[in-house]
Length: 330
Image (cartoon, rainbow, N blue to C red; front, side, top):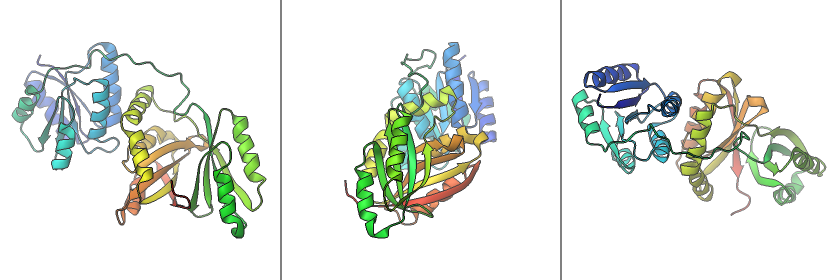
């Protein structure tokens, strides 16, 4: 046997052709239709001690694109040979893929002989032995207690004073003025206990000229352990730096509030989280809503396309946008 190959591609015919073709060439091949199923398969094989000797992944998939999967897998298995395949690539995508260690790139369509040749040019590696990492206790993505408060200003003459007071309030992690349907300010309160969050709520509610529209505690997304670990790795490797850069750059920034089918939360959450323009995404309202922030940078007309992308995810029931109004510069 030449080695075990994991294939990730959302097109059934391609999965079938690659699996059959590689099997005929002496490989053992397993195919997955999306990123989440591939994450499960990689972890399952690693824990069983079988692992994979190669990964073949498409770039454009419905949940997590191949370049993001590549980034995390290379973080976990640096020496694993990876072949990135795509029918819609360009030089930028090719160079991004090839910048990773022990990675090759192949444009579709191709023959099985081209695939075998490309795999043969990669250095041997495997996922059979996973690097041990310390796992945090099951406390969720946030260690502290957090909640979103949405606020309506009822005294327009004091709007700036109210914003400044909220901005400087203890335990307020972020304070954003927004242009929404029924809210003027979105607050993220953070503390070490629920009592501290309740104290924030009481202080805001007691302010003159302010009406608290909602208080929504941030909850742990109910994700499979493998997916949770994958997201944590991606956050450390990529997402945090992207968030910091995006918040400092000019452009359109908006909050989104998404009503979701609770039964499809994992698929929806992971799909939203891995959208490039999404800076962060939190679960509220017992898993029936997501709240987060997106950036359109300076591209004209880009923000409506992002909102359309959110609306197009299976299980998303409603998407509302609240554009951030920059009242204070960093």
